[in-house]
Length: 143
Image 1: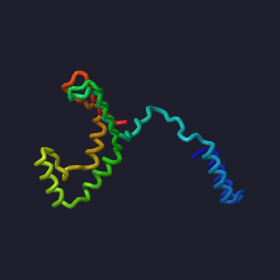
Image 2 (image 1 turned 90 degrees about the horizontal axis):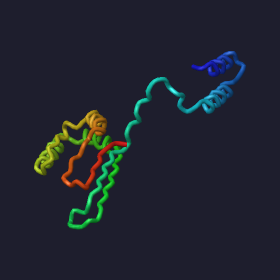
Image 3 (image 1 turned 30 degrees about the vertical axis):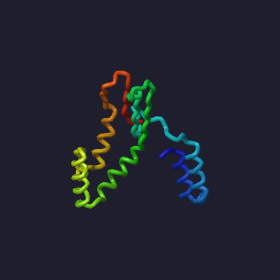
Image 4 (image 1 turned 60 degrees about the horizontal axis):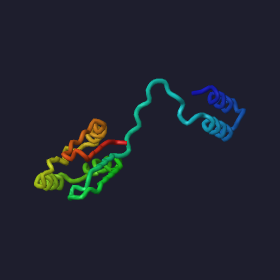
């Protein structure tokens, strides 16, 4: 607690100021104080908000027209989806897993946990995408 706040509380305890006056003084102190005081040491990296997928390529259908795909998915949507998946009844998850498996998507929805999603997000900084077209680029990253 800083000295000014301590002094306001002392004046309140002594009866020199009213609780309303103390509240106004403390609010004024908070307005004067910088929003985020500089901290010692390195600051943690901000939590990513979006999954971004960028694709730059040629048409591929015989034309030379450029194709640009820019997908920006809010990671909060993914986080919410993982939380919602935990609410799905087990019999429905079993059926969904079977349908995914028949479609060639080997994902077990019963194993989907929020901490796994956070681990995935952390590792996206190291994602590499290999494509056969030497003139095309694909980028996947969090921002």
